[in-house]
Each structure stands twice: as C-alpha cells, then as structure tokens.
Length: 170
Image 1 (cartoon, helix red, strand yellow):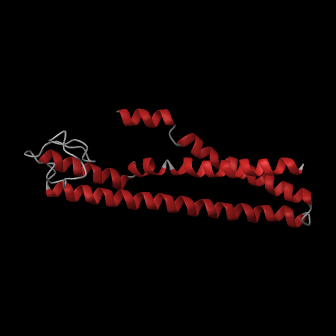
Image 2 (tube, helix red, strand yellow; image 1 turned 90 degrees about the vertical axis):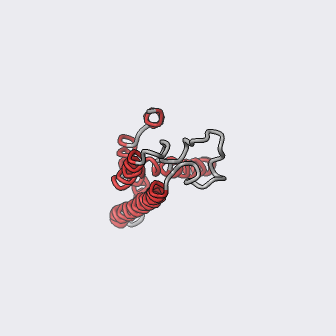
Image 3 (cartoon, helix red, strand yellow; image 1 turned 135 degrees about the horizontal axis):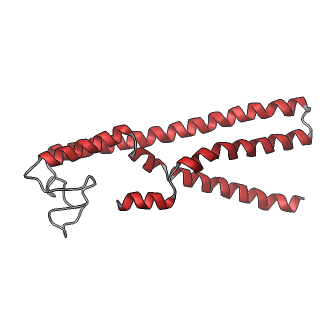
C-alpha cells in the first residue's frame, strides 16, 4: 500500500494548489460586481458624459484621442481625461483594490474557520473510538465529504469560463 501513498499525496497537493489558483482567479470578477465598485464605475461614466469637450474614453483608458500614442508614457490628462475623471478613476481603482482585498481576506477567514469546525467535529469520533485506525480513516473521509459539500456552491454559483468570455465580449 505504501507505493500508492506517495503518488496520491502528490496528486492531493497538486489538486489543492490548482484549486487555490482557480478560486483566486474569480476574485477580480467578484470584485468588479461589488456594489461599491459598480457605483464608482457609474460615477466615472457619468462624469465622462457631462464633459462635453472631452473625448469619450473607457474606464481603463484604453481608448485614446491619438490611437498610436503609448498608453504608459503619457499622463492621463494628456490623453484627454480631465482632472475630475482622472481623480474618479483613481478613486475607482482604490475601491476596486480594497474590495478585492476584502473578498480575499473574508474567503480565507471563512475557509480556515470552517476547517477548524471540521477538525473539531472529526475529533468526536476519533475520541469516541479511542484513536483507532478506523476512526482516523473516518475523520479523513468526513473531511473529504466536508470539502466536496462546501465546494458545490462555488461550482454552482461561480460563472464558468464560457459565461465569463461572453460577458467580456458584451
């Protein structure tokens, strides 16, 4: 049985690492949909509409009055963003960063808290069965069931790759 343990441990660690990468990939998408970020984006768009003399720009400054002008070498005001829009863009970026951090830290806190709860629950059969091998197997099996059960909401509610691409194209 021992020759099987090493490959399974490697697969488990690779799977865990891949799951962290995949779940962290959703944080920017979730942050973009947060109310405070949407409100900041709406304020920028509203400001840009009221600036009748300013050329139209996207929030990220991707469109420019001069199509061949380098994006990073010129300040935003030279590209046509007025100081109000530039300040609102800076505020939007600040709110987006804070929202991303909040979502990430709350997710980590919730994950570790639920892991502690699971360890405490698994301790009950281990202590009742006096730490036998079967009780440890039961604890590991319950941990797997716990992980699978609480992964289902993410699998159901987080958008798939195709729906994210469709949203970006719209």
